[in-house]
Image (tube, rainbow over all chains, first blue to last red; front, top):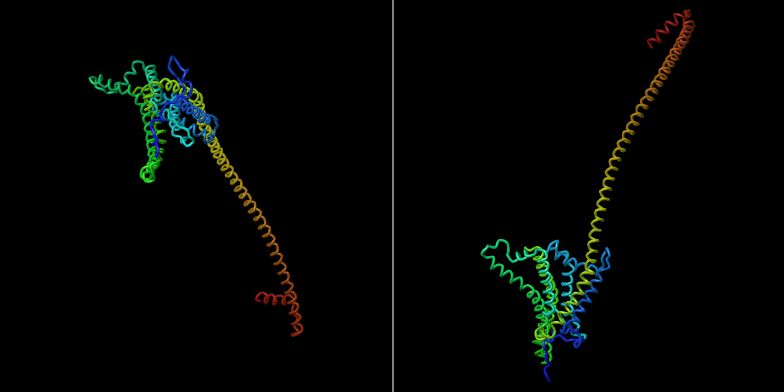
Length: 261
Length: 164
């Protein structure tokens, strides 16, 4: 057999500039339009297409309108549960956040590889998820200080804390608060990357096993393929859950900012 | 791991395009479309609630109408019943009166007829007596050669008549 084909499970995450590499720049920083940016654009485009199907404003909704209203109702209910009546004004932001991440996760899992294209999941980059988590964190800080002023710091001292424990509790709570944007962004990035790496590694087992002859294919390739099918289903679940978790945690943090404790 | 190895060269592009496209999502979808979708849902909920309220009001009105109609019907039924029983009573009284009148008339007629019959009968009996007395007178004349006065003959016949 000739040179063993090398399957690099990390190659799927590589960012490749498509155009604008040379002259697109802001303040000396390159802003080349990459494959990552392309998939962000596709996510936005599909999302706009999807939601515009819900704009028919019919009294008796069709299936599409029903689906869109289901999502907005879901976000509305999530904010009502976690933030309360004050949460209504965050519906546009949380809806955008949830749907953007959901569409990004799902289009990154689409089996367009069979057409020779490479699906790309931009939520598997912390440089992308970090933007969303830092924005969520900024909104929490902005709303918290705008609404409660310096009283917002009482968030870090739970009710009933003994006086001598206040400095320690305050420090611990402050650290846990400051860790939030990192945990929020990293959780999504890690979940997406891990699933895609796992799928890629299993598929490399199928390919190398198939190339190594029928015996290895039977004992390594076929079980890997079956496992891949199952993990694909799991990944579809994870894609939805991670978008939900991101939106839910943003709601929980907004609740701290709106209502303190 | 491209996320880290390419970070230095790509972070600005990643952040920039993320802000651009997420900003587009927020402005077009979040700010532009979601409020309309939500307004449709709110309108529908309000419409359903008002329709339900209108239906409830119509139902209440219909029930009130039904109740008032029922009471009117009962009252009318009772008054009709009253009229019918009054008419029945009237008719019974009239029947009784005319029956009484008819029976008195019939009684009178029967009495008159009986009197006539009795008169005719007594007249006939008297004539019978006369005839019998004359026959008895005649028989006595012929058989015994006795001349019996008409009064004796009548008295003898009369006693027989009386005693049968």
